Amino acid sequence: MTGLILEELADTAEVVARARGVSVNALMLEALQAEIDRVKRDKEFISLLRSHVQRDKEILDRLAE
Image 1 (cartoon, rainbow, N blue to C red):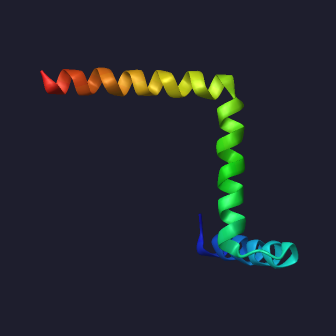
Image 2: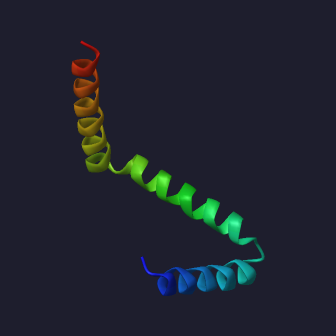
Image 3: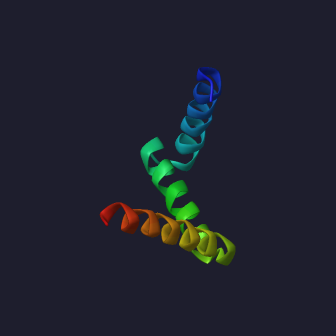
């Protein structure tokens, strides 16, 4: 991301937070929680995550030998 995009995102977040009467930090925490809740319900994502975790475990097991 470029600095301009980040600045625009920060400006937009500030306006949204102000309009909702919350801090930017609270808005960010709410957005993160919403994303976490969304991926918890996404069966395809959970399957992919399990696959990555299993692969990482196999690599760690080989390294530990």
